[in-house]
Every structure is written in structure tokens, then in C-alpha cells.
Image 1: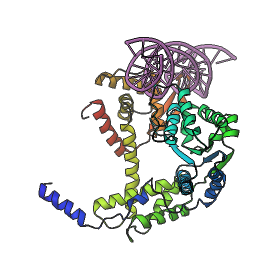
Image 2: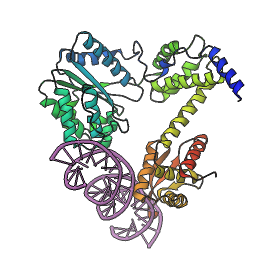
Image 3: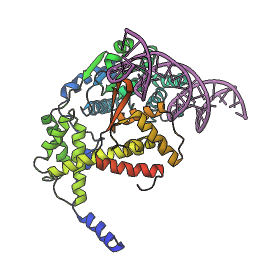
Image 4: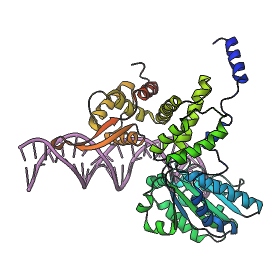
Length: 407
DNA sequence: AGTCCACAGGAAGGGCAGGCGA
DNA sequence: TCGCCTGCCCTTCCTGTGGACT
């Protein structure tokens, strides 16, 4: 594209009516005016949390349900409302929302408490360093931040299942103990979990005292997702921009996938972006299919790009030998060592590589099946689960990261 | 029934980078 | 600067395991 045609392109782009009226309505940070099909949960949460407005201690709450069931949205909605009322009536209420899955922010005990302190403290407080303090010290700072005056503090821990899986339930136990020792402040904890069975495996002390109230968010059905999508798309698009059957298709796909409303909204947004880029006028069903593929591919490529070089070498071993019959840990390790030798990477032990292979399973790149071949030992059978087009893009990325050049 | 393979996967700890207070 | 603390990535060592083979 020459300078002139580039100029014309941008001019024309600006003159065209934008495809999206308000794209924000399809993004994850968007807070709708009302939350559909979650009236019951809202009411229960409101009843449990209302004492906080009188600076009394509310019951701790455990909310659970599948991904995209509206847990976070509903709780944030309540959070906003509570905060608005508190500031209107000058009630000392502080609410901290923390996503425990955020890498390098709140994915360890230390980081979680440090982050919580940061959220609750005044801006004047000295920030807690990323590392270096004893954990006791961090708890102490958190305690001081919470108890510095008479106030109600609500601590919302999203994706709490991820945290517990990683560091155990000791954090929760410590928080409960601290809660009993507070002199002035009243602390209420809200745990949000995607794992519906989390509660069963918790320390009984934590279970009974931490989460006295449990609130289930059932998955949405296709009709409910349609409602949600219609509301959102009426804000996001001009009239007529969404073709017939598109909303139904998004809803059906998402309903099949554990009633994940977030996924349905993502599908619609990405489909819209595809049409916008094509210069089209209307989203059709075929765009939903392309959007589905694009979301999956982009998500995977980003995930892989964020991993270490060692991870890349293991994944490259998996990808390059995918056509050589059934894969198992031993053969992958041999191939991996060959790759390491080629790119001058010090090879890890088999123990560590087997963990990396499990991580690939966790990311949904492969499926692992532990099988026994009797006299010939026990091993994991490995199957790649990603599409050939995704493999193509990922191998490109891996070759670049490992300096392997073209195949 | 006992053996043995090729791992799986838990536990413990080493080494490193980096912050803090003395 | 030093000792102490952290998280993180990794190794070493170990026990456990399902089923084919003897």
C-alpha cells in the first residue's frame, strides 16, 4: 500500500458509519443496567451483605457455579451498588475484589495478602514489595490496613478454587483467625469458585466458619443466553446488524458448553469484528463459525507464547512427532533431548518434563491418559487435541522462540 | 503367585534473584 | 554489606501402580 492509497483507506474508514455502536457492551468489563436471570441470587446476596452497611459483620459467602454463569458479574453489580450507597451516606465501607488466578498478582499466599492490603489501604500507605517480607509481616500489614478504624470490609476472592489448588486452604484459615481478632473493623469474605466440588475437600474448620452461606449459580440455558445476547447486542450494534439465526447459534454453542454466557458474548463480539474488517454490513451464521475458530486459536497462541523456552521445546517435541504413532512420556523425552541438543538448551530431567507435559494437558493442548502396557510398563498416552491450523501457527511461534528456522 | 517394566507423581530441598532491616 | 526472608524453577529421591509375562 503506497502513501496515497493508505491515506485514502484511512479517510474512507473514518467516513464509513462504524459497525459497532458501542463495542464495550460485548466486553468483559461491561456492567449492564440489570442482570438477567440472576434475580434470586442478587436478592440473597443483598440480604446477606446488608449488615455491612450498618458496619456489622455479615456472614461469609461461598458462591459457586460453572464458568460464565454470571457469578462475578452479579457480585460486582452488588459491589457497585453497596459502594454507591455507602459513599452517599458516608458509611465506612471498603470492598476489595481480587482475582486469585491473576499470575504474579494474587496467585500465591504472599501475593494475595499483599494485593488485598493494597486494595484496602489508603493511597498514602507504603506499598508491599513483590517479595522479601516474611509472610507474617504481610498478614500484619493487612490486619493494620483493615483494622485501622471502625469500618466494614468486604474481601471478594474470585477464582478461589485456583488459589486453593495451588497453595492449599491455609490462607483461608489464617483469614478466619484474623477475622476473630479484629478490634474495630468487621471483615466479610466472599469466595467465588468455578469448581462446584471445592467445598467438599476443604478443611472442616474452614468450611464451617468461613463459608456459612453457600450460593449456587446454575448454568444458563439456551433461552436465557439468547435473552442476554439480545440485550447486549441492542446496545452494541445498529439495528439490522445481526442476521437471523445468529443469536440463536451463539446461544446454542454456549449452552452446549456448560451454559457459558461469557463465551456467547465473546463469539458475538469477534464475529462483529470479522464483519467490520471485511467491510460487511451484517453478521451471518458463517461468521460465528469463523469467530469460534479464531477465539480458540488466538487464545491458544497467546497461552503458548507466555510460556518458557523449555516449555516450548517440550511442546515442539510433541508437535513434531504427532504423526509417529501413539506418543508416550519416554519417547517425547528422547525427542525433547534431541531438540535441546540442536538449539543448545540444557535439558531438564524427565521428572520436570513430565510435569510440563501435564501442564500442556491443563492448557487443553493435549489429553493425557495413564495406561498400563503390562510387562512393558506404565506410561501416559498423549494425544494432541488442537486443530492443524492452530498447530501451524503454534509451530511457527515455537520455531521462532527456539531459533529453529524453517522446517 | 510373583516379577518386572516404565513410568506417575509426592516430598524435600537446592540455587537463584530480589527486598528488607540492621 | 550481611543475614534473613520470599517466590520460582528445578533436581533428587522415593514409593506406588496395572497388567503382561514367567
